[in-house]
Length: 103
Picture 1: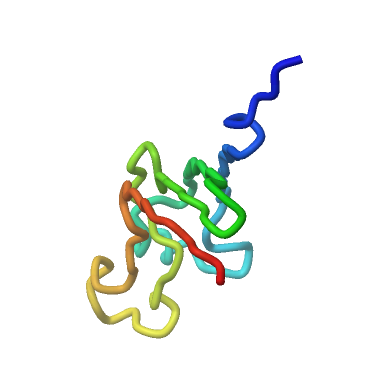
Picture 2: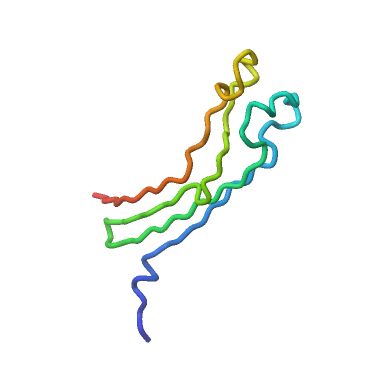
């Protein structure tokens, strides 16, 4: 029987985050204008490869579909400013590539 080393050393993972209502039931409807999206679905994918006992290589793509959304807002505490100044957008699509060495 052949041993498949590459497959045994590789891990692929896909992660999804779905937010149905960013505000929650206690937030007034006026806060909706302070977010770019009230509902969003974000997908990430990553690949790890164990090259040796102490070396691991990885690549990860975050926000695969480049969804524009915000997780945090200052809307409750500062209603006087314009909506755009009151939320901080999450990063768009980005890629991380690297290696880890354990010693």
